[in-house]
Image (cartoon, rainbow, N blue to C red; front, side, top):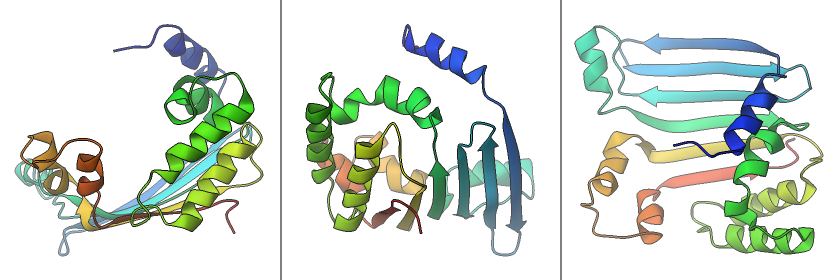
Length: 195
């Protein structure tokens, strides 16, 4: 389902972008583990994002094994770093930011709303230092002062086994408790500006 006006604006902006993309990955057949050693997207405007991740319980040995893996894979850690000089704002912050910081045209009110929403995040999932980094980044938007580094760790890993009870309604909880329960064992660490 599209968002009238927003989709057109994003399509228009994407048409102006050019980027260099690099991908390095490998699969350990014996360990049934896939590693995204590096995904790098660097745009001519200066924006960039790099990603690294590990995926457990994956088997690319045959089509049948791949299909079976789709129901049992898990992602124990993800590492992201990005720096933005406008792309983040155009693609995400502008069209979808109201969910985080409200619809007010007053910047001070928007920042206050954003900070209140960030404060609601459970500290077991997003530690206080990470909350402070998130707030600092959005306060500096649309002119952030450096890169953002995000480390996501999960035990058990993120994947169908973790999410299935909530998708099927068997968890016995409802939002937002359902979300926090689903993310037990997940920790999101954010640094801004990244070291």
